[in-house]
Image (cartoon, rainbow, N blue to C red):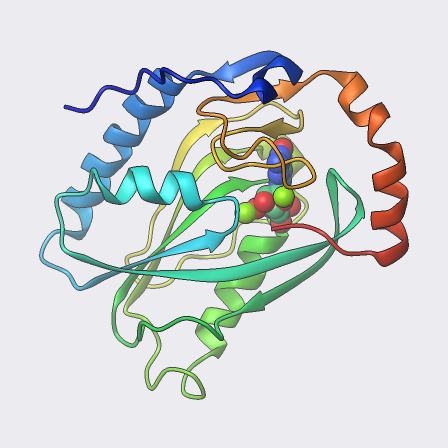
Length: 221
Ligand code: 5GP
Ligand code: MG
Ligand code: MG
């Protein structure tokens, strides 16, 4: 129904060497995922949890294509980066600002990308451990919907999903660092409507920023 042809293109598009998934491709895939999810979760009490920040564009597009009433929340996951394009392994998860109760609900976690798998592993572990402290009961099921899956990079196996939970993956993604459609490099490029690979000189020119980030050891999302 909606057209995904974006009339305005940010000047950031000039830094893209190669487009992997166009806005139209992504929109078609999002509709397919939404149809499958809607069929699987029909009649259930569903809470959709987007993982900030990267999933915000995907979350917005996906929920608008669901034919289900859903509650929506945002959770925060932060990897501590050794360099700006690779997570060092420690992941910090926070449900602090989550206003929706996931007790006995069917949770759909929405992620931008599964890379090493560390974030997902931590999120699922913490979500189960959050009851009864934060939520009176555990969720009835936890499913995961990730737009991109970089299977080649996995260091943690995908955790067993809870209950009738299922993994929905939009695309297998080659082992390259991608930006756009919510995904950032140094908090930039998130607003590009497509997903692509940056020109290599973009990384070189930000070497200074990279050193600063290494010194403070923080980044991610
Ligand atoms: P993990 O390695 O824990 O599976 O992924 C951690 C997070 O790193 C992802 O949720 C995403 O925010 C970020 N990430 C992983 N691969 C990429 C990538 O290719 N591009 C961008 N921009 N972020 C990525
Ligand atoms: Mg993420
Ligand atoms: Mg990031």
